Image 1 (spheres, rainbow, N blue to C red):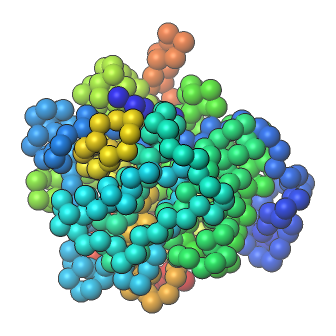
Image 2: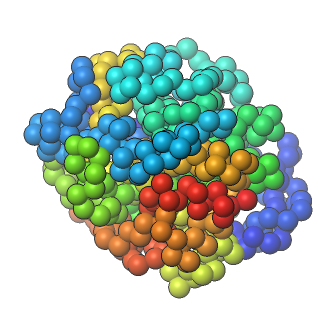
Length: 473
């Protein structure tokens, strides 16, 4: 079984990347420090997808009863996820994402995604998206070879596309494939920057889903990270909403060498003030998708059956939604009302969706390197495309692109909007054995209102989508 390698107030100057460096422009997010970042230079940063497999493949999608009996974890199909978030209430009124395009960015992509999405749709009775296009805006992707990196990104791509589509079946999908994952900092993120600026500048969609991240500490300096921010500044100027996964290792994230940090860290780009960081919850549903208990912070660290399928041992292993305080970005103005929680720094996540491995979703794949079939898949890489569909629904209802939605999220939360569902149980503390020593990293508990484990909470889409459509933009 594969395990994927998994700044201030909204005032002041934006830092805009140019070919040679960074230039200050207009208004937006100011960055701590006065030095102008240098041009991008080589450095090692572990850019990793967040998707994880929670079980072996099967020829048909497993049911909740099967997963519980055979794997001792829950698993859900798209219909159950739609019901859990009250999407039928919107679909019945014609709000399905019609007229919107969800942009999904992944290294390499998946060589079989067109076929696999068709199988997914036919199996679950979903309509095909109005259009599904694949572009390679940063250069051609090398021919597929079934090594660990390519298999990992292909699985990530399938999950992203299938579940963004499940949440907004009327929206078009644009998959943006980049030609490399990471090669000592000279490739990877710079290609993602190039590709995202292309789709933004050519107005190819209004919401971008990113199911990848890198720990802030892996960057050699704040300036080296800031030099990569150009697409988020560009997106803000063009009213494009950008989402990013908060990571799957709880308060501890992954080092460049694949080990875990033994102290709380956060990842980027979800920590960027111009990006909406998406954390993870655990859904508790029946076979019809109805809630049997409240959503809680996703944390499978001590869940023995889940650890056995993900890691091949009884654990504990870090398996929880990321969250914490940025070391790069100061608290943005939209978080002023929660400064008692975030302090002087940017806090993540902003909001959370289903991500638990004990509560995985069924995704289909047929690319080489693993048996073709259905896999229960999990992680904040699931949560992020789920929320991209929600944004597409809100864009349709608003009749306009909503752009940066973070101010609206915090305003809705502070006003007690019923579409925001508070998450008050759980935490993202994790434990793991490293160097033959059991280590624990104390994270953050769920609290009433905003917290560093779930953000403002999760959503009831039937109520949240019209609230967001009215509050944002």
